[in-house]
Length: 254
Image (cartoon, rainbow, N blue to C red; front, side):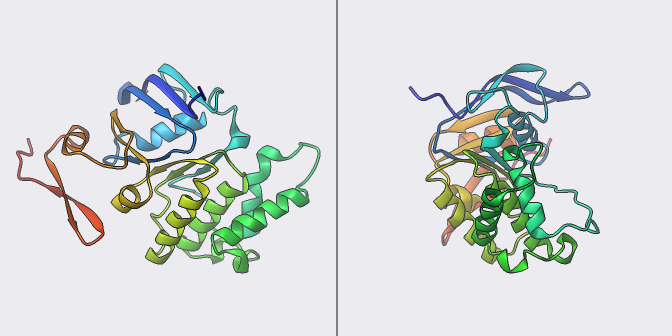
């Protein structure tokens, strides 16, 4: 049997003694498109950082691509929620995307033709090739987000992690991005943290709801029980047209 791309068992993580993840169990199979949902502060971004090896859990065992998190950086792409880049830093869009090739570069060599070709293809995929010479500070927020997505794709990953990738992009690019991810899903496993239920209804193959604990469903559907376990209040899904919405039932806020 092929080992899972992600295997997390009994994972717990706390900031200053306050647990944000507790008894988390998750297995992600190769070729899966997992949508991770849940309230703000529920631990979604923390979970991604653990998978990347940026954070080490206080308890539990985590394997990514059959290796310790962080040891498979050549096979993992990541688009963070907050990029925290200084907009006055003199770097072009193309140079920033090339940084995605760092795990492939030999220490004694610069970027080679294969690196530049990968960066070129990534910029074309997100529609940013015409802006490749512009400095990052000259781009709009949505354009910068496209560049950061291109940087992750330049790594040619087997596993792609995205944390709220459409938070700063226009609605037109949102659809284009998810269409691109659906195409890429044919050759890579994708985990997307998102509040956008259209991801779930149109693109994802499975869903995980995270709010300190993790509730996994191997189909792209949310049940009332999953939502109430995650948000700790009664929720209904209402659909009018193609886009589902979350609706809170009347309940005691206490």
